[in-house]
Length: 306
Ligand code: GZL
Image (cartoon, rainbow, N blue to C red; front, side, top):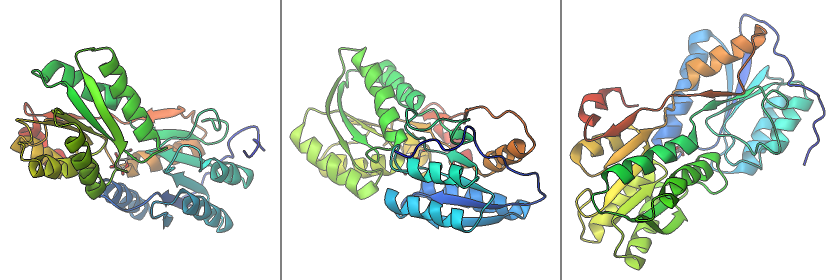
């Protein structure tokens, strides 16, 4: 793994406007599209030049996307590392080229790169807490439904790793509950549906599905219905992201609860870059507050969902 060539994160000069890169992981679901739109809107609002790339689901391409931004001489790079380890070389290459990196949304393996040394900071949700909040809600509201299928996000990504850890730790502390099976659906709706169908066939006693994101939760609804069961009545479906479609399904009773993971990074990301240029101390982790939706508040809060 690349060594740490510099002692600290490269500075960002104070300027009126900047040329910044945003290396997106993929554009395969509403959450990612909302994140990209927020970044593009903010760049336009501030008159900054945004060099945008889409890695189309490939960590290797995301590394080359960052390297191309370095070659273009951007002032700073916003990076949403698709997976925790493969993007480390890109972070070190930017650091070596004197370009500061701000991580958005997804984090990197903390044993390989550190905020304040290798990149400016991480801005995003506390994924472990998101998983814990889903687990806590289930323990309090299960009404006897304790046999769980877990649909994991992208293998190796920090949201998948940490949403699993947060939820599974709560379940481990509550012996009445059991995770029957846990498998990746790659944050994808149709793959989530396919995996849920397979696991429901293998575990007909399952009566809870915990999906690491809305797309897989919505896919799971189709799988539950294909199995001749009623979402919300026979099987509780739990999710994270909190997009309009999923919150609407909470109102309908097909999804039991959703923890928000707000994708609107633009204002906070650009403000953090300016604060860094102004020499302000930047916290290593800037955590976004996440709303919680269930039958008690989804109807009222639906208009505010992204
Ligand atoms: C979480 C983000 C995840 C979303 C998914 O911050 O990285 O990626 O939860 C998206 O919907 O694909």
